[in-house]
Length: 456
Image (spheres, rainbow, N blue to C red):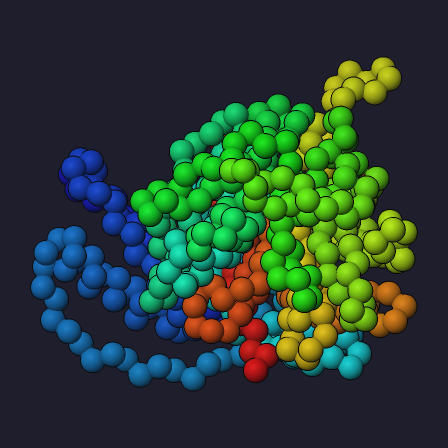
C-alpha cells in the first residue's frame, strides 16, 4: 500500500474535559512508536489541538519545519449538548441516595445531601491504558519528597509520576503469571526513607494468598518480601501516624482470620499487636480510624455482602449499612462444598478510607459504589454498568451519605486520596475500568480520573 506510518488513538470525553491520546508507529519497525497526549476544555478546542498534533508530528517525526500560525481565539464555553459524544465517560445525573442539588451543565464533582456543600468543580483524566488496573495508591517511592502513583495489574506493578501535565512511567516489574495482584498500598514502614510498595496477591489458582513487598533501590524495584501469606493494608489512625495492617486468613476462608498491626523486624514484616479476630471481613475492604469523631479508633469494614460495618475494639458490630457499596471484580476461589462440581467465587471487598476530605476537621468515610446490572442478585456473576465515589459521615446514629461523585461508565476498581500532581493540594484519584477485556481476543481499557479537592 506504500504506507510508511500508521496513526491511531482515542478521544475520551469526561463532562467538559476532552482528552486526545494518539500514537504513531513506523510500519517498518525501525523507529520507536511515538505517543502524543493532550487535554482541552470542550469540543470547540479539540480541532486546534489536532492541528498542534499535526505540527508536532511533522517536526518531531518527519523532520518538516511548519510555519507557526497565531493561536485562534478560544470560544466561550457552551452549555452541554444533549446529543453528547457516545463515548463520553462521565454520565449525567446524580445519585438516588442524596439530595437534589443538581446543577445542570456545571460539571459539578460532588452533589450534597442535606446540609452539605459542593467541594470542587474540577476534574481531569490521564491517558488510557490497555490493561486492567486492579489497585492504585500514592506514595514517595524514590525518596525525593514527591508523590508517585503505583498501579497494579493482574501480573505487573507500574510506577508513574505526574509532571508538567504528563503522566510518565518511571518503573515496572516483570510479568508474573503465578501471582494475581488484588491490591496495593504505599508507605515507609521500615523507616529507610523509601516508601515500600505492599502488593496483596493471590496465587495463580486464586486459592491462597501470595503477597509481596517492593522497594526502590535507586535503580529499579526490588522485592524485599515474596510469597507472603498476609493481606496488607496501610491505615493512618488519628494520633498514631501511618501503620501497617495485616490479615492471615484461616484455612481457605478469606473473610476469617486475625487482624494484626505489623512492624518491620529482622528483615521482614511481623505481627506486633492483635487488633481483633475477623469472622466476616477481609482486610482488602477494611480500615481503622476515628470514624465517630470521638477519639476512639474503630474498624470500618465490608462484610461478605459488601455492606459496610463499624466494629468496636472488642469486635462488636456497632452499625451496619442497609445498602451495599463497593463492588469488586476480583475474587478468591472457595473449596467445593457438598455436591458442587465447581469451586465458587468469593468476591473480595474494595478499599475503604477514613479521611477529612472536606477540610472541616471531622473524619469521613470514603467508599466506591459500582452499580451491578443484575442488582447483586447473582452471587457468582457481576457486570457493572457504572460507578461512583460516595462520602459518608457519622451523624450520631450511623454513617449517613453526604457526597457522591457523578456516575462513571464502566466501574471503579480502586481510589486514593493524596497529592497526585505534587502541587501541595490533595486530590481524589480513581482508577476506572472502561472495558474489562474478559472476552477472548479483547483488550482491557483503563484510565485514571483526578478530582480536585479545593478544601482550603
